[in-house]
Image (cartoon, rainbow, N blue to C red; front, top):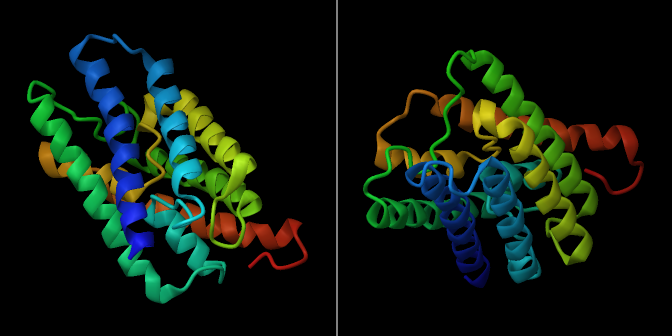
Amino acid sequence: MKQYISEAIGTFAMIFCGCGAMTINEITNNGISHVGVAATWGLIVMAMIYAFGEISGAHFNPAVTIGFAFAKKFSWNKVPKYILAQALGGILAAFMLWFLFPESQFLGETTPAEGFPSYKAAILEFILTFFLMIVIINVSTGSKEIGTMAAIAVGGVILLEAMFAGPMTKASMNPIRSIAPALFTGNFQYLWIYITAPILGAITGVSSCKLVKDDNCC
């Protein structure tokens, strides 16, 4: 039970802070800035890995949980429970943002940039999650993101990808991170991108591990 509570709290914190930064940036007319939003995402993920890495593994992302299970480092039996815990934490975070900032139209939702085709957004999200999972699988201990190296590496790659890809797709890399705000904005048009692309990217990232590591990869 402690693992699931940790996943719920960690996902809540990640989405509340990350989407919260995007929401406050929206209602203050770029008061935080794009760089500030990207840094917020990276820092909150880093902090939550330090906080919960040894308890739940600090997944906070269904794509990462599925990736670890695909790598045979995590039990498939636990996958639904982890995803449910992540969903509860994420939805509660989005609800709190909706309650606190009713003037926001977007609540940090994920949609492709205007004029950026959906299929290109899907490809970009796939590549982003591919890189993210490569980093995670190589710095984690089993199915757990633990220690200074994991926290800095994973938080750093999320900051990096949010920095350069955020303007095009919002750099979700996480189905729950996209689903949660959409439940309160009602914009479900692009959710298929943010559900399928990260999961496929994570699985492909795990598979590529076999090409560069010989022992106990997956």
